[in-house]
Amino acid sequence: MSDIDNRIKNITEKTLMEDILSCPKMHKILEKYNFPCLGCPFAIFEMKNLTIGEICKMYKINLKNLLNDLNEVLKDK
Image 1 (tube, helix red, strand yellow):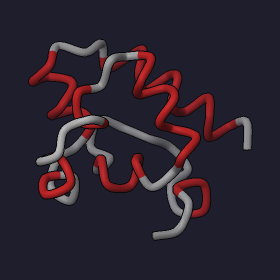
Image 2 (cartoon, one colour):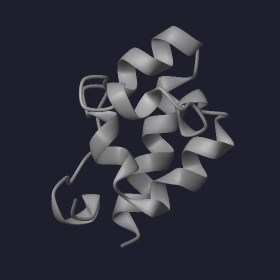
Image 3 (cartoon, one colour):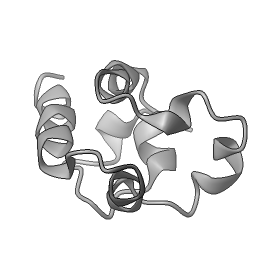
Image 4 (cartoon, one colour):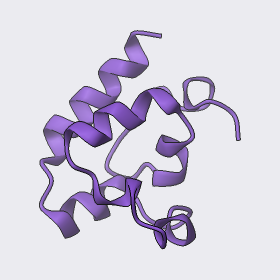
């Protein structure tokens, strides 16, 4: 899979986790928010179907702040 920087210009609540996880730079941001999917062995089967918004809702993660941080990484390419 190619780097997210080349495919996505803006991450929204509808962005698939598969796309976000394809960029190593995003992992540190997700770790900052204690994103549960990073260490979950079953997550690999769900990433093609789950959006970041759905996961934030499930785990009560502040979506607005997370999106701001992820999009900052995209701007700093």
